[in-house]
Amino acid sequence: MHIQRLNHIQEDQGAILIRHDRAPQNHNVWHYHDELEFIQITKGKGTFVAGDRIFKFSDGDSMLIGSNIPHYWLFDEEFLQTDAVAKVDIRVIHFKPDFMGNDFWSLKESSAIKQGYQRAKRILYFSEDDACIADFFRQLSPHSSFKQLLSLLDTLDYIGQKTDAQLLISESHSNFQQEEDYLRMNKILDYIRLNYKQKIQLQYVAQLAGLTENSFCRYFKQKTGKTLIQFINELRITHACKLLMEEKMAIKEVCFESGFQNFVSFHKTFKAIVGLTPVQYRVGG
Image (cartoon, rainbow, N blue to C red; front, side, top):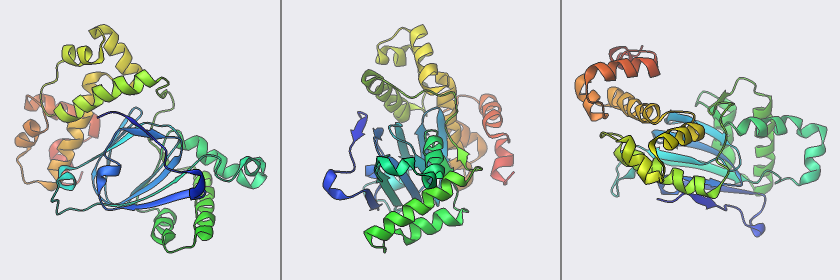
């Protein structure tokens, strides 16, 4: 899988592009784009990877993703099967940073939206409890194009003034800057995605990236803000959380199914990342 630079909006398509997806294939790929992405996972669960964050998403979660931020939606397996009974419901709107024209951004009235743009560089997250965001996506499709545009501006203004919105990417994280970074990181992340439930050797991943082990460790930490083992463990614990909530497996079975080799390591890592023991998490904290 190669990272893709996507161009969502053509010149003759208007200022914004709205999609309603019933399959995850448009999102289940490592990609980036000039347009901002405002997305609601109305129905669907999985793992979101962007910057230095691995985030478990579920029904009703929404995000505003800034321009040119590589991101990847890893939907849970039940949504990816060809004959999947579980169907996703994804509502997404793309718009370029200057979709209102350059003069608009010099207006005093646009100041809150500009602030929202700045924070979207770290990805803004909204839960299903945010009634304003939920209403925006629920009412978007039936509107005329002009009303959709007004509704988007109104919601972006709301977001810009919402100072308590959760930011997913850390302030210190730096985005990939060179094309070779995208290609190299794509190889690394794709391998980890397919193999994180198994034992992953540093030597092999470094060789895959075309680097020595020491150079790889520095490179990976610079790009993700995490060591390789931290990154892999977060993926494993995210999967373990899903199994603990949705399956009837014994906790030791969850440990091995998530890629850990022994229960002590699993228990220690789970508590360090989640803040609870696996038992406490299963019973709801």
